[in-house]
Image (cartoon, rainbow, N blue to C red; front, side, top):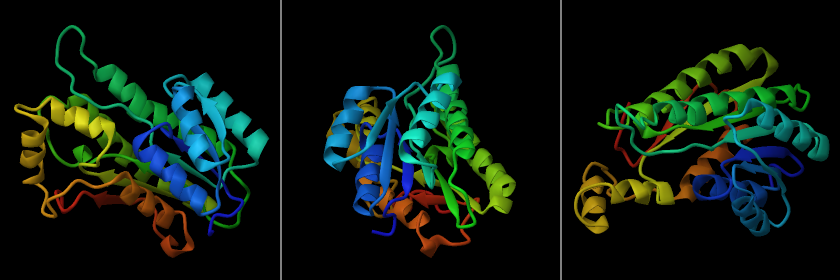
Length: 249
């Protein structure tokens, strides 16, 4: 119960890693505000958590983000932390229908609006406050056909480093997590785009992972909980690679 009474906003909380983070932080005692585009998934997560505020918004829209975070702070108190998980995946191809702009607008620009909205609504110090951003192993490695996703996630790492330096005088720690293959709907959708059956694609993908298995959303949630704890005192501006050894920087 290290987070008892602490107000934490989790974006992308309607499914996958975001939902796992919400459940873990609730178990640590946090008071949660859950943010995502779709209200139905948020309500499902809130029911699993037991008690949480729900704010549906499109993080690509700055005005919606500002409204959601202002309402969260007004209703639940100033923020101890933001865990920014919201994002979209998939390929993008050059030419008509190229998704590059939407990928960057959601994963990078939308996350930036969330970070700035959280900054305006932070709990007072002097104790540490926290921003944790979920990036991706694709911020580290090259994958053909994923220029938009890779660029947006790599941009998050630059954003985290810059904000960590900018906000350190205010005792605000800013970090990123770079998951590899994690057993979420988004990951399975990616495997389904590969040649062969899902099982064949999965086996092929795991050959590139030294530990030989996909991670679980709860694994990432555990790392988030650690970053928000006093045990991570002094950790800021870091990108933590959690990918079964697929990337060793």
